[in-house]
Amino acid sequence: MTAATVHRYADCLEVEQAHAPTARRWLEARGYRVRDATRHEQAAGVDVVCYRSDLRRPRCVDYKVDQASAHTGRLFVELVSNDRRQSPGWATLPDPPTGPGFVMWCTPLDGGALRVVVLRRSVLRSALAGWAERYPERRVRNPHYTTLGRAVPRREVERLACVVGHAPPVH
Image 1 (cartoon, rainbow, N blue to C red):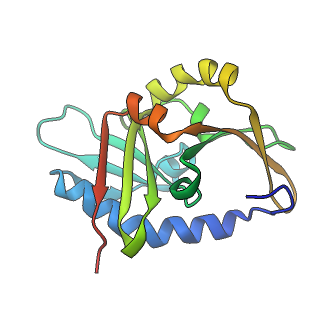
Image 2: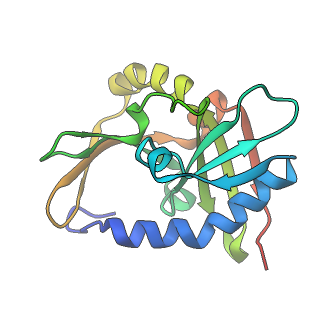
């Protein structure tokens, strides 16, 4: 993304929704029963809630589709969603009340497949201070505000991940 590029939330949401069926199928293939998040859960940064009989509590998952990651090798970590309102970015959100929170980065690959990196929110939050020392703040322009974050090497995020995988396309 160049300095002159304006990032539109609606475009990002459209891309995320296009890849959500593949991400969901990947979760279901791992034995999870998956339901869409309620509005209240969505406000806490949750896209889907996953249940499995061997887990005491459901897992709350926030999908992040990072198209640039395929060629940059970095994953964007959002710290401030809207600088004008000082809205917290998804990387700083606490675990939702429903259950432990997870971020599921999905990097689109050729043919509709996804590279999947799943990281527990608490692990992500604990890594933020170290990343602040090593990676510069990135500013992403939106039409009426700026989003702040860091572009972290995918391999570094993968070292902290609980799961790294590949999701075949849904046809």
